[in-house]
Amino acid sequence: MEVKLTIQERLKDLRVVDKHLTLEQLAEQTGLSRSALGNYESNDFKDISPFAIVTLAKFYGVSTDYLLGLSENKNHPNTELQALHLNDDMVDLLSNGRINNRLLCEMALHPGFLQFMTDIEICVDRIADMHINDMNQLLEKMRQTIVEKYSPEENDLNVRTLELAQVSEDMFYSHVIHNDLDAIVKDIRAAHQKDRTTADPDHDTATTTEQVQEMMNKALSYEGTVNQKRAYLVCQMLQINYESIPSEDRKVFERVCARSLMFPSDIRQRGKAASFPKKKSGKGKRKK
Image (cartoon, rainbow, N blue to C red):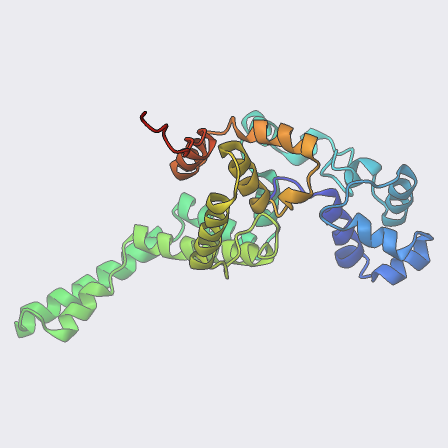
């Protein structure tokens, strides 16, 4: 996931999550065209007019800095640092960019995060330890009583059950806290399933391999020099029609591709062979 919300994501969240509006409804209330608003929320759209930014910021009640991605604060732009109750090390960690602050915020805002923190606090303060120890001692006393009184077999079901029922503190806390954290991470993962940075779960590796092989075969069979073959392969990967590139631009592009060390040796070898001058096949002179 991205470290910060993009401008497009901010606009869409404000419209859908905060205001619960369709593009048509937003257009009616702001005076901006529906098509322009749709473009502003498109991933590949970057040209948003200053007038639109100011209009949308006023409508949503946020700062223009928030819409432009210059601030992460939508409702509390001027909150004093002291009010956050953070120590110096935490401020340094949040401000130096070493962690994904957006992910941290999503974890903290998850409905299960308060329970997660409560369980950690119980673990740290050893609040439940006494009860766990009392329960384990009771189970162990019962087990020993049965062993002394009845002398059961080594793998007796009841004795083994009393033994396994005793839970270590580490096992108890790791299970509880692990479940808390699992639920949070799974929900956040599901929420970002359609992000452009998220891998496609339906991605077919075999199909991709076949496509790459097909591109390679076309490049190898392309009539031209090694540089032309390289440029042709790059164009296939970028879904560009190589033949439609003007000749002068094509030459520059070929020279750029020639600098790459990433192309297979097959292309290099065939290119070299293709660039060699052909031997003349004329008949030899007759001997007099």
